[in-house]
Amino acid sequence: MKQLTREQVEGRKEKAARFVRDVLDDPDRADEIEDESIDDYAKRRKFQIINPGRRKNVMANKQELEERINELEEENEQLQSRLDEILDIVAPSEEEDEGEEGEDEDLGEE
Figure 1 (spheres, rainbow, N blue to C red):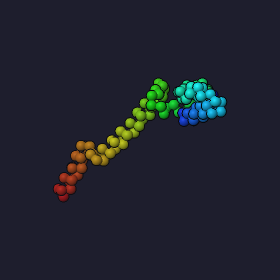
Figure 2: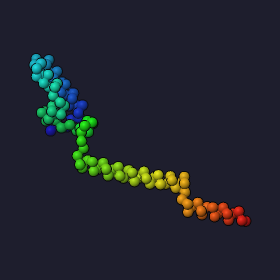
Figure 3: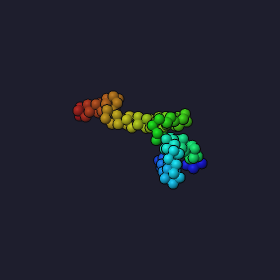
Figure 4: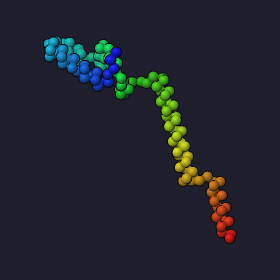
C-alpha cells in the first residue's frame, strides 16, 4: 500500500478526474471521481493517508490519547518545578524570612 499525504491524494484525485474528462472523454465518470471523498478515493486506490491527524474531526485512538496524556503530565511536572523555583526566588518561605530577620537584628546589636 502506497503512503501519501492527504494533499498528495487530493492532487492525484484531481489529476485523475481531469484525465478521465479530457483524455478518456468520460465527463460522467470524472464527476463521480470529483464527488468522491478523499478518504474513499484513497481507499479505492489503495493509498494509505499518512497525515490523517490534520483533519479536524478525526478522533485519536486510546493509545495515542494515553501517550499524549503522559507527555502533558510530564510537561506539567516540569513547569510546576520551574514555578516552584521562581516562587522561592520571588517570595522566600517564612522560615527563610525569619532566619534573615534574625541576622539583621544581630547586626543591629553590635
